[in-house]
Image (cartoon, rainbow, N blue to C red; front, top):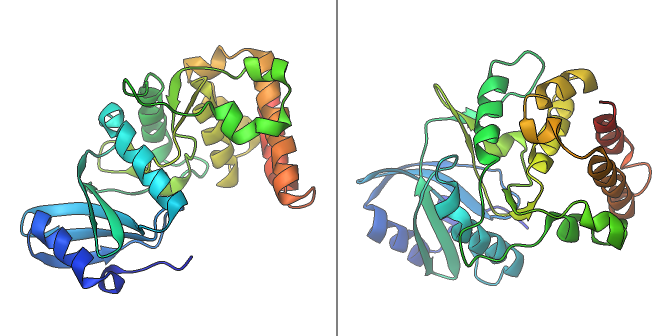
Length: 261
């Protein structure tokens, strides 16, 4: 669905933001985000904030925003704090603290890679807040692609981000942030490290470079090889089912490289 910029929001939605943040003085519209239809950094009378939103009839988008709001209290060590949530003008909007940061560079030799590793390492110990029920990663992502016995190897209780692409990894002056928790799940903590390693390959790192980077995570270094193989084979089967053999070829080659340890 098409993105909407600040001026494309209904007047009632913009007024609701102003009522909570003060008069909006400047806007930087952001054209990225899978689950949201609107995103911008706003400069208001009360300072800077990041606002994202979806129409109230977008069930999938609202589900993602609800998940993001539910887990925010558990992720503020690695991600900006949720300030408020409002529904107005047919839109649901979330406001977060804004950070001075840019999208991470995951290419070979990037100075961002240690900062990204540090924030992902900090995220490794996160748990979902009490009372928040999240899906197991294996059920949501690999449901029909693994057997019941294989499924058991991928169960876990670590809070997973599951979408560690460069748009969700922001780098500031001396630290990184892991943002956009709209697709959280639970499972073994090494899964986010494995997915991040594949993102490095997407950015031009060789498989050996990406695996050497991932090796610094204790969870990945100590992962059960049988569980890693189930993850890789199940992910490849799921991608083929979703994209077709040809379109899944490149991403599956990157995933299979995780077994070359």
